[in-house]
Image 1 (cartoon, rainbow, N blue to C red):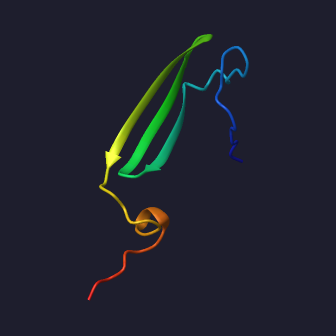
Image 2 (image 1 turned 135 degrees about the vertical axis):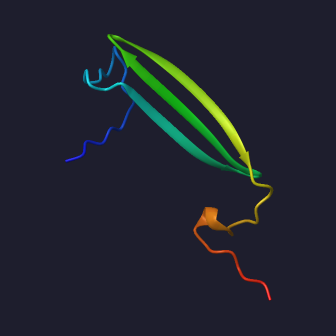
Length: 79
């Protein structure tokens, strides 16, 4: 059975098993011009950890409200 985690591990408050090497939290956020992807990576080594945070925009241009693949609907065919 797969174990699901609801929080990030931390060496002092929520210790990972010794077999855990890295944990990642990725967030995809819709913006007016596309997407913003943020990622928190936590790498474990011995009894310590190292955090790495990145954030990157993906510019798609302005999107019509509630249309397109981001909302699960197929684009309307013209003509």
